[in-house]
Image (tube, rainbow, N blue to C red):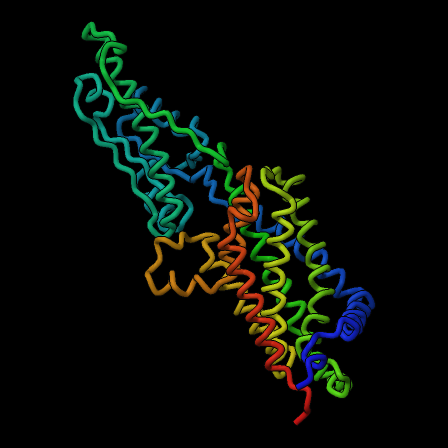
Amino acid sequence: MPQNERKLDPKRIAAVFKKEYLHIIRDARSLTIALAAPVILLVLYAYAVTFDINMIDLGVVDFDRSAASRQLKQKFVASGYFKVKSGLDTMKKCEEALRLSKIKLILVIPKGYSSGLKKDENVVIQAIGDGADANTVSVGLGYAGGIFGQLSFGILLDAVRARGFNPKNIPSIETVPRVWYNPDLKSVNFILPGLSAIIMMLIAALLTSLTVVREKENNTFEQLASTPVKPLELMIGKITPYVILCLIDVAIIVAVGILWFKVPFKGSFVTLFVFSVLFLFCALGMGLLISAVAPNQQLAVLVTALGTLLPSILLSGFVFPIASMPVIIRAISCVVPAKYFITALRTIFLKAGTDIMSLWGEALFLFIFGTLFITAAAANFRKDIE
């Protein structure tokens, strides 16, 4: 094959680009959805998905009915983590409420709680949780343990003072926790960058998953096949307008995250731009590959949703830590592009001084995946109609 025939022709790529660009701007409804859907999804999921669990419904059974037991109940209310449900003053009522998921925890204060404290006896308080909601109960028991720990420490100090000792002279180990990069431990600062990656993975792949298969269904595929455009030129020409459109989406999402949700941005916008291009190159390439092999638009949409949304949520580290997964699942997660983009986004957003070289591994994997998807899509594209 002559050398000039193996080279990509910018003019042919520009022609395909113009054709796809005109199709995008003439389809006002699809353009509106492409620009508005990411923001709508981001806002909805950012408010819905949170790891900050407050106001846990609590039932309190007080068999002691003393000033000390009422003080303990008030400590749970004042913590801000629990909401004590009224009317649940018996064990039977609390058990029924727990069975119907109206409360998540039952606090049982035994008879003799107050007298036991006065006699310097160990007092056992029972906390019963609804295991059907394991995550909420685990967090609630942790909160309860913190409250009991503070109460026990206060009782210990009072006992030490009553015996004439100065608590300051008793040696102890004190923990001084400091959290870097997200000092307030706001879950939105952790969730929003991950949501951005998942939403853009879905939107970008959906936008391009219909391009080639739509040509086939609209009977315009024959016109493309009769032109001298090469498969790789077709893929590049078709993907470039969507890269620009999705970059606009990324800019809008980042602006919403910073201005509306107050997520701090400590990194470089240049680094963010580079990683966004690499990730979109990968996501759009996946969509083109699906479009090239899918027989119709319905199947293309289904495969795109299953191939992007589920792996991006389950195997990217967005919610579940990859390190705690079985070895086989961890190996599978290595081929999920969203995993690398989420890592990069969280680092860029929350950690100052991050540049491209700091995340060269993630950038390399995204580039490799994008190249593989585009090459595979071009290889599956057949100019000759069978």
